[in-house]
Every structure is written in C-alpha cells, then in structure tokens.
Image (cartoon, rainbow, N blue to C red; front, side):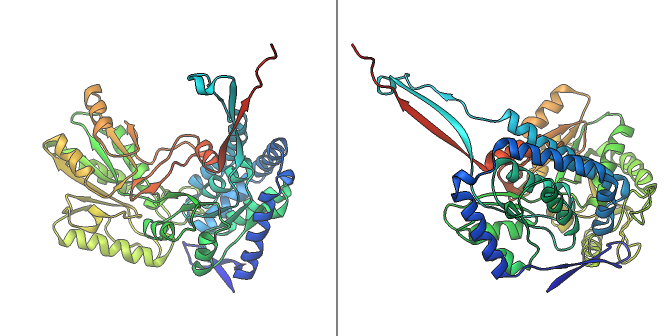
Length: 464
C-alpha cells in the first residue's frame, strides 16, 4: 500500500510514499515501550540538546528546499512557505531553550508540623511513548511542534502526517536521524485511518497529540486506553470585533492577511467580522477592493498570495457553503466562485444569516463574513454563540472597548489591533469548547509530554 502525493495546484503527482501496516506499527510500539522502560538507556539531556541543535543547523542549510517542498505538497504560496520553514527551524531552537528554562522546584515541607524535618523537590521525566497525528496546512511546522517537544522531553515518538502532505514530515524525521537521534526514538508512520486508530488507542501509547478536525479528534479521545494523556488542536470560526472610528486601512490589511493567508486553511483564520452598521457599507467596499487585488494562482510563483485548496472536494464544499449563504439572504461583495478545480476566489459576504453553515462552522477556505451591529455587546454575544472558541480579535483606539472585548470574548486569546491568526511558536495556543483540549506551544507541549516527579527526603533527627 502507498499514498500518492499530488501538487494541490495542478494535481500532478509529486511522490509516492509507502504506507506502514499494523505489524510494523505493533513492533514500533513495543520498541517504544521498551525504550521508555529502560530508564538507564534514556537519552541524556545534553544528548538531546546536541541532536536538536544539529537538526536546526541542517534545516537552516536546507531551508529553501524545505520551503519548496511545502509548496509542492501543500499548495502554500512560496512567500508563506519560506516563513513556515523559518518558523520550523526556530521551533527546534525553542525546544532546546525550553530544556534550559524548564526543570523542577522546591516544595516547602515545614508549613505544618507533619512536614517538619523534610525536604522536597520536583524534576521532569518523560511521560512515555508519544503518538502524534498531524494536519496538512502547516506540513513542516506542525510536525516540529509535535515531534520536537517529544524528542526534547526524552519520549519515543511515532508520527502520522496527513497523507496529503507526508513529505515534510518524512524530511524532518530523516533530519533528526541524520543529526544523531537513533531511529527507534522517532518513527515516520504514514498509515491508513484504521491503522492510525489502533495506534492511538493502544494501551502502550502514553500521550496522544492530535491536530486536525474536531469530529475526528473527539472521536479518538473517546476511545483512548485508560491513562493515555491527550492534547487536541482543532479549529473554529474566529470572530473579530471592529470598533467605530478606527483607521480602516490598517484593519483591512490585517484582516486580509488573517482571512486569506493560505486561502483560509488555518484553524484560527479570520471568518466572522463585526462592524458598526453605520460603517458597514464603506467597510465592505474597502475590503472588496483589497481582496480583489490579491494574486491567486500557482503557489510556486513568488507573486502568488492565495494558492489552491488542498483537495478539489474542498473547492466543491466551499462553493456549496457560499451558494447556500447567498441563497439564504447574504450579500456577495466579491468572489464567490471557483477559478478552477483547485482555486477559489477570495470571497467577502455581508450579513449571511446566523443559520447558514458559513456563520456556524469553520469554512477553512478563502471566505470572510462581515456583519453589521448597533450594539457591541450584542455583537460579542453573537461572536460567542458558537460551540467553538479559539483566538479572537478586536480593533479599537479606545482602551475601554479593547479591554471590554478582552474580558468578554470567549477565546483563549484575544488579539488587540491584530488579526486572529497571529501566533508565535512559544506562546500558549489553546482551543476551548469543541476547538480543542490542552495547550499548544513548544514549552507547553514539552510540559505535557513530561511528568513532574517529586522526591521527599525525611532527614534523620540530629543526634543529641
């Protein structure tokens, strides 16, 4: 069995990758469990540091090749693929930094008479075998966010990439091995969904890291073996509150990036924008003018800003959702149609009904919805109404309004005068409600993949 990787833009085959069957996965899980149980065989921290540093150096030497590979398999525009490759390198460096910054701490014992005469401290140990399943939209940096922390924490790891984009994952695992990581500590495990489910739910899996759809993530969580820890990162329909009177050009530029970056295939992509009703017509006009200037096409072209959707079926789905919203009363401002079997035009829709899928579900495509409001609290209420909550944003020149939105919006993070898709790789990144479980970000993932173990010393009383 094998998977054929296609270029999302022209659907031409790029590579073939053999799939791993269950007997091989079973062997690797046994191997990972034995590695973890052999405490004297754990990789020392200084060995992990050296491996990760060498891996980052190799990636720096191959940064352009890694970026081009992201373009070929994932359809991300070259300008953004280069940014992703740079972020992935920085993420490996962050794993090393987190090892330096991490560690345990002293626990006071003599707060009561019962603890008197004792000393306690904590330190970190690896949690055990990690199984990770990743998504297609950031095929290198997401892998680094799942595999890098496992290696840094000292956990054996099996990684299943999205089958549309396995090549970046394969390259990163190979780079780790080239940098000195024994192969048994990190296995590239492309496989079918049935095999992946067996791997995830196996009792030998101590930690499961998932980036992908909420439907799949929550289903797998319900089937985990007792004791398996988990981190889920899904998506949402990110809301933005625009206050009255803000300088519109800067807002439009930010929303353009946050909504149409990678053609909207981002879990915190700008999707629902709430604008004062009195400014709605002019705002939508300016957003249309900006969206229509975006260069849509071949992601390998350095001028392209919006590339293809990952599959032709996704173009079909986005088209259905847009047509449904317009038929239900939404006003199409620009776009709204496919440009080819793989490209969909950057689209702006004003006031689609709350019942439309485009107002309730993650579109994961190049579509921004704009709604007018008369009462900002009602806009916030509408923004919070979905069963998803991830990152949100507010644009305002007024401290009182910005702070009110920070306090009132349901997201785990609220960006002020910036779009919802802003992220740096060391910050906490957490989906709430159906949007996920646990906290991402390099140091937070490393903490999840380790155990804070405590030692308590009972000192003998001094001889009289």
